[in-house]
Length: 462
Ligand code: HEM
Image (cartoon, rainbow, N blue to C red):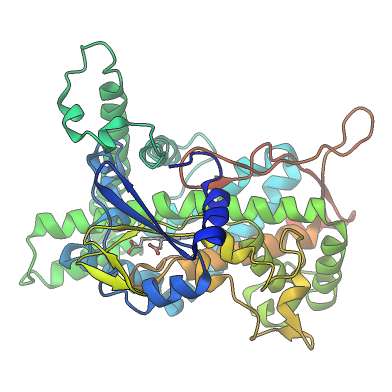
């Protein structure tokens, strides 16, 4: 399997052999789905048989056991998903808006005080907001112990997804090699990752349990209350608690890197396309005006900003090959036999950069989503692809969209972003490089960020 930008290699192979591409490696079948039509046909419309996940010991070993996104399709996964969705469906997410708005205000204050640490401020904002909503924990500054737990826990799991990084993926018996043998240093690394994942699952959860009867409101508290009032359920208390812990922990594991990476990509795009930045700021000036920060109620009037967000999702796919699905039973797709257990990889990147659908797809051009002054309902909508498919579609998508909207609107209303300049005054060109694993991260993400006017400070500080 190609390790570097595999979506480009699959695109070339698919243009030669068709949009269903089959590989067989060490007895395991993998199918690449190479067009938007085939992804919708197979992963959305036939999701009863295409919603499983391939199991590998690496999930547990790298601490990914807390992420129910890895669970096989079945009752245990469904229960997690139902509990998660209760608190992340559109009307639940709407209840978090006032806190998200307050945290966006804090974010612009942090940027004003210390603009050089923009990526760290974005990370703090995302994790601190979730820590409050999930556990009612107020974090204190960057060196907060709960944030340290999140950071430590998120370092392991993505490593398990790096193709070829650990041979255990292909030879599971290697997991039993004792750690004192030469070459078995990975065992110590696995032990560390599992211990940090356990801390993320347990420490904030125990905090909620300790304060459960003090009338404090939080998502995990509400799930625990529901557990207390339905003791006659089908699951033991231990199972229920395990599920609740996982619902909390996955929000960081699945949500943080994806959302922060998308926000950074939007800012990066606006550095590279200053005309787009000027247009979005003109819109904010008209709709929001100089005397307040943007709010969620401005969203329907901020057509251009919403198009910028859609274009960011299209232009920069954080998960370019989606999260692999897997078939539960033998199947047939357009005349091809698909064995049970086949891994299905949707090449999301290719359908977001299809020149037949998006003219000049490598250009960042939000106008492609606007018609007659409104968002164009006829344009291919990135939200239908970048958040995955069928029964596995990302259940955190409404939360992610809200975070991205309010933070981006607030930053762009108050600050100018541009590429930093080298000593010879030339702008430092940003590079888009894939980080390890299946997540794309804009690397070398450097910005110059400055208040748009002298009034910004008083607006932020009130
Ligand atoms: C830009 C932001 C995000 C993107 C692009 C994104 C994308 C994805 C994708 C592609 C999947 C796999 C879907 C599939 O299997 O077809 C997924 C799964 C998931 N995401 Fe997100 N996500 C984002 C943010 C979030 C946030 C903020 C949360 C939580 C608050 C979240 C929670 C989840 C969960 C729980 C799953 C597992 C679903 C399952 O397997 O049933 N995501 N996401």
